[in-house]
Image (cartoon, rainbow, N blue to C red; front, side):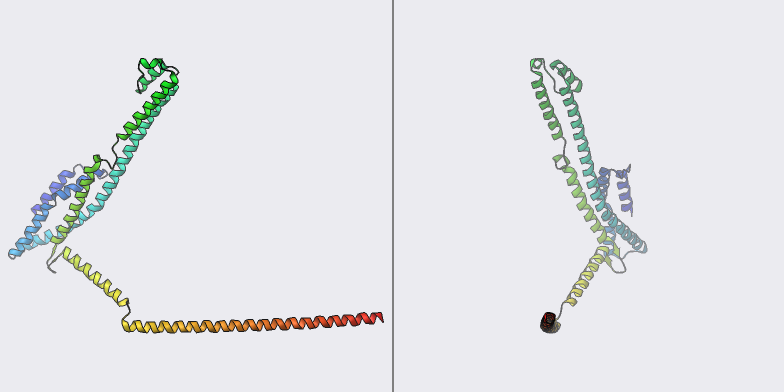
Amino acid sequence: MATFAFFVVYVAADLLPPQPQDPLWLLKAATAFTNAFIIPVVGVLFLHLAAALSPLTDVGKRCRALASRAAILLALVFLLLLPILGFATWRGIANVKTANQQQVDQINRNAERVRVAIRKASSPKELQQFMVEQQGPQVTAEELNTPLAKLKQAKLLSVEQVKFFYVGQIPGIRTEAYEPIFIQTLRTTALTLAASLCFASLAWYPNRQKSLLRLFLDFNDKVKTRIASKLNSLKPTPDKKDRNDRLMEQSRNKLSQSMLRNEREINKNLQKRKKNLANIAEQREKQRKKELERQKKLNSNRKD
């Protein structure tokens, strides 16, 4: 257990003073854990080695049980370091982008102040004075005889060149200046995952005579086997497949017969409707002829 105590003291010394809102401190904390994880690993490993060489006493068994519990705790701690590393990396990138944007804004404000002074000048002498006050591009004595418009244009161009130069000097995220930080983050992430696996493999369960990692792998195998068995049960066997094919064929035949029967009924109803319409038209025609004959009789009676 002395190795665990030494591990805690060693890591705590690197984490003082705590600054959890600083991404660099979070990265430093993760690095401190990963740099010292070998200390408790060696301690637990020696306990398991001693148990393998000779039977442990009651004190040794209690120490092994406590070490196994501590290994479980450290396995979880190192797993939790992974999202912390992700958050620290994201926060660090966001802070760098914000700082770079602030520098760009400051450079743009300074350049705009110098441009306003250049446009405001009414003579080369006044322009020279403004450039001294605003720390802009200097106007030499030889340039005082240059026409004001041409001189202003030259100084405005100089301001743009200086602005772009200083903006280009700001290191971006993808530059070599930040490459060591990303390499350190990747290294810490790999060591964190390795440390978690080490502690999980050293966390011993005496009742089952297996480590936490072995239990997890066995559970994973059981889940995969159960899922595969469930999927295989859903697949039809050859006999069931033939039966399903016959049922599908019968269902298709019944559907086809039903559609033909419906089609015949529809055709029959259409023919009946056409016949009824023809009878109605014929009756109307007869009625019209009777009306005409009656009208003719009435007309003839009136003439008589």
